[in-house]
Image 1 (cartoon, rainbow, N blue to C red):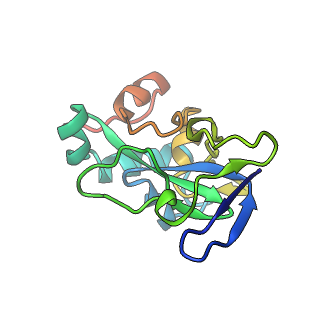
Image 2: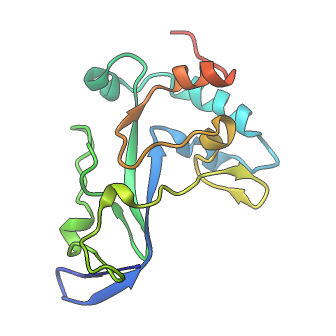
Amino acid sequence: MYTWKTLKHDVQRSGDLALYWEAYGDPVSDDYDIEDASARELWRIWRKRYPVDESAEERWGAGAVRISWYVSGEVFESAPHAIYLPDYDPETFLDSFSTPIDITTGEPIQWTRLPVQDKLWREGRPNKGGFIQEATGWKPSPLQPVFWPDQLAEACGLFIPER
């Protein structure tokens, strides 16, 4: 549990916080229901539709795909201290709120110690983009800026688009 204040109105807020991740293009799952496509099928659809993330590749090399980060829980704001590409420069949690303080210890938040939310694609948990974690068993480390889906696909026996 954390406590923080809104910067604009100095209103105290408190609650649990976590990190929510979104891979470039993973909202492709918004077009499907769990009954329509398995996690592996959605992986194939996603990789066919988004085989390249040019901005990420320019910065981190061939095959890199960006991950956007959000603080979730009592709020939903772009995460501070994440590396954002030039085509996406959002205001973050710390532009609207004070640094959260751990209610138990009195210490300022350690952003890299926040739990990363599981995103799944199964009955009862058809999360946006959850097909990635469901198909691979993988989720990113806190604030990890990119990943290489082809390397992950190779390790999991999933579809890899031809370049």
